[in-house]
Length: 94
Image (cartoon, rainbow, N blue to C red; front, top):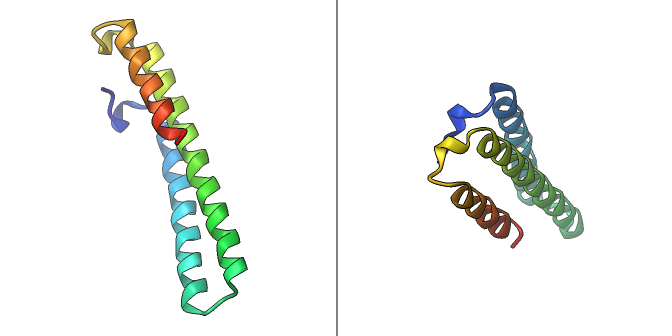
């Protein structure tokens, strides 16, 4: 199974940058709750956070798929690599 350090460094940095934005969103929501903001506003921001994590998951899956396709020797067989990719898609679509 590939590790994050084996991924393209630009891709890895994009994922880290996206995570930092997500972290900022989460802190913003925490501040909204601490400040007693309107529930509808808080829920709107939670929905945005959920969308951001979903987008991150999609980017990660894409990067992992590209890595697997360009390094088939890392798996016992192409079928095993394909099965692992399908498993990740299923997990991330729940």
